Image (cartoon, rainbow, N blue to C red; front, side, top):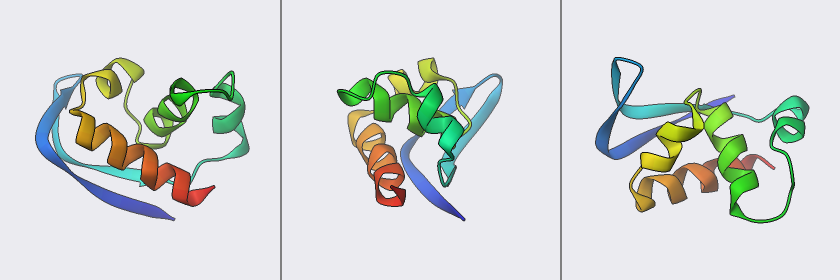
Length: 77
């Protein structure tokens, strides 16, 4: 299962520009790779993995898009 998440403004990830992200359901491995489960950094790492973007791209998302992405992933959990 995946969800399309429109972005408030396009982002460029490794020479590719996206105006929306396809977000897949997290796996057990995603949760394990998320590291320490306390705080926002955990869900941010899991969300980046589920959207197939590097964490540095997640860090550059506008706050509204970062929040929307983490909510989509949280809704899967």
